[in-house]
Length: 457
Image (cartoon, rainbow, N blue to C red; front, side, top):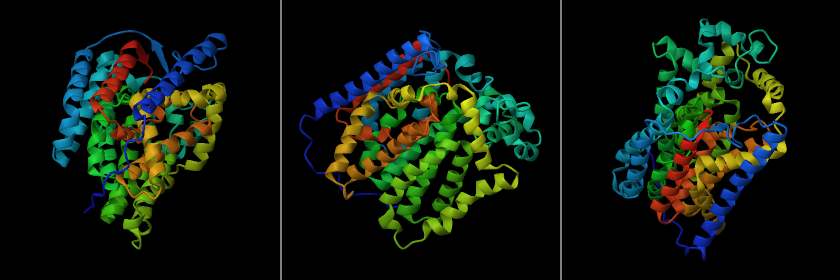
């Protein structure tokens, strides 16, 4: 059904002083984080306009250990030791299943460092979260028709922050889980972790389809051991990331395998993505990279027009028919954002502190991988090598983050909000030599964050 890229990786010699450039990239990323911490601490201590406990993260200083600590350490050590060789030799489908299982193990162990209640069961039940309004959706169509009337602060029974800040597909998901007997924070957590862990699998499928299987295999351990797993367990954004990632993966398979089913599925999932989070319309940046990379295979075949676009129309049509107006809700959300902390948080700080948050999500290894990706694109602008094609895919994720950052609608909390974009930066780690060393750095970062801070998500 699909074609697998077999063209060689770039045959260009390793750039001179590559190790020094890796070190420089890591140093620059580390200094960015340190600056964001120090400047943010000063701002918060002097005028308190950041509204985060441990800038630039929504977290509080709280050194602790928990039941997940031994499991997280053992899993990290095992993956560092055996992950790269296993990724190189496992059958492809077995590798995908292993990556999914490994991703769940890593997310669960990190979440349980905070204990079952605080780390898992209660995460999605706070006053800001979707589960707070389940009982208000006893009549889903009627609630959707009146949804925009409760977005602004000051309106009767205005929605909690996360409900108001997202289209209603996010809340309706948890309402439907409750309807089938999977209500409460624990089941919501299981849903988010189980689906969220598939996001890395979707990225691997995409890299294989558009770049090469070799690069996908090299990237696999980094997608499993991602520091961002700290915020994927448990956050609804992990669920959003999975839906968005599979929309991209199916698009890649549709173009390279000329599959009508994949094209329709991609459109359907991208439509759902846009009704899970307004900001995830920027996943179009990653989709654009996929279109560029798959243009040769799709030439002369109306895959997108005939199958993708009808699939894309399904979710918007359903919600519109039920009375929800996406554009009206989005404009009201902009006003709601200014009514809350978003209207006070200083843009000048978050414009560069948000990328510092992203460093903590993707890890210092990705910082080194990004400059190598840039070098690969510079060497092969015609995208004739697998290295250059992977670099362009990574660039799509970077572009989405830049657009979100400049918009001013993501001031703080981007460690979870940008998870769907950050995932597409992690494959840049496939360019790195000595993967075990870099994986160790990724694991240490995640373990330090989770053990030293009480994260808000």
